[in-house]
Image (cartoon, rainbow, N blue to C red; front, side, top):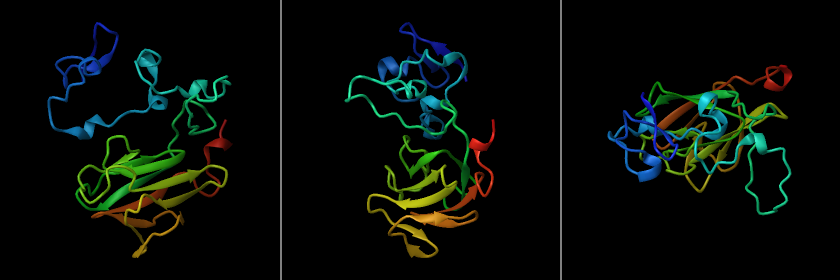
Length: 196
């Protein structure tokens, strides 16, 4: 990876782009979109923080009161604002992406084929591009739920999922032609809020 700064102050990987993609909106050189998954603002740290031209509202501003009621909604992913603590994982056990793992965070983890999804499964064309289903971590109860979305078929324990169900460590579910196993990090007495 070769990070380059363009004349307008954007940072980009010159190994994948000939010119700044933020200025030109051009497509990557190669067709490997796996490495093109969007990194959300709360994951960015170090020297690039505050220097990247994004429309995303930074979480450090979440606690500040804005006088405009039309202001953007800001998601809170943990009590430790600005951190993206892992809460669990999904592991692909069957399908085109067998053996791949996907990290889960606080709140809604949207699953789909689109690059904007929290869990992006590109190789299974039977999965909806935008939010096929979601895995939700609720920190107050320290538990996970599997939530069906948008009329897409999700199978849990061999049955079509019609309403949210509580996930337990080791549970498996199927979307499209992909089977995913859920592995919890936050469980029983383990939770990030207990750590200082």
